[in-house]
Length: 489
Image 1: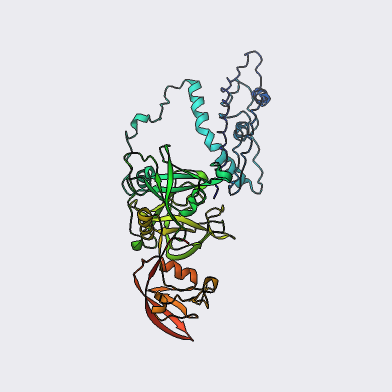
Image 2: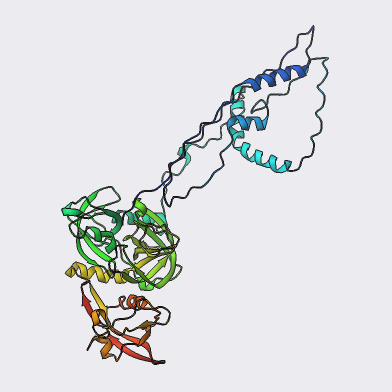
């Protein structure tokens, strides 16, 4: 799965408003021949309007890519426009001119005409101009040399010397977990053993102090045969890694750093069985290659049956997933889903995308993300570290994987014409036959073959499970002791 950085260039800060002109000095008329003040005021207004107006410089729009959301914005008025809105002479307005002795006062202004929509326009202009009022007044007072004006600026030294985030806050949890989360770069061997083949970006987390990293199988599958793997920590240090074991069905893989650094801090593992709907969640990963990204949400649902594929036509994976609305995108795969205490409760693995079904496609998050419960992932990881191969619990029967809504129907025959119910297998010993429809597995309702497999794989081989099934329209129950299958083939 390939990913790429996406984003929009940040525009430059808008230019500062031009310096307002100093207030004009009231004209003093000669004693012998006083001039009317109205003409002087008109002359001042004409001089002010003749001044060149500042021009705004347009910034080139940043290029956008697929999945990038562009939000339109309304540009702030240019300084010249703001000045025009406040008065013809800019802000601050000139002091009122005092008429000379004996000169007539200018005629009183006429009452403004009432116009529809005038109040709305005035409010909008006031809102736009209000941001520049403080600066204008401050400059005017400084020019006048008014020593009665005192500064109200708060010095940085008046702020607290340090700011501590309480344990349990998102910032505190993320700060503690980030050093134990890695961004994984996987490259396939390519044609003829070329190590510069195609690859992708995913996420993983430190599992133990020996340097084992847990992630998704689909993150490293392209590099599993002759490719290269590397893991980059939040401090920027990169280490080569190798695959210890992979489980396609569970979509879990374990890597090991070739030269693990000292002082690795494994993330604490929680208990996914005790998670409740509504619990807070924190997801950490590298969506679209953006490493060390933290998003938050809640547990939206539990035991959500999910079948997902890596898009390459390989084997699907099945999980009884934790559903979360924390933003999860391509590149988050393999990263930890944390609870409010910072413990891992799941491995982010799949998303629901509009029109594309379940899977790890390049579609973006719509608030439907799915994580492998950590209790299941832990069992798989331990098995991979110990033997390098996964172990799957099985019932010894082939079920229909396409029908949905009526349960999981045991097929008439298995792959290659083999019996659908393995002779002497767990299902056969429990009395199940071809054509039986399994509707309940332990305390879970079963509506399809993928749902049944998802529930089976939450258990271990040797577990005894109560199964409810229908045969010839009659409901019955039996107990199945799960068998096991080693490896993916």
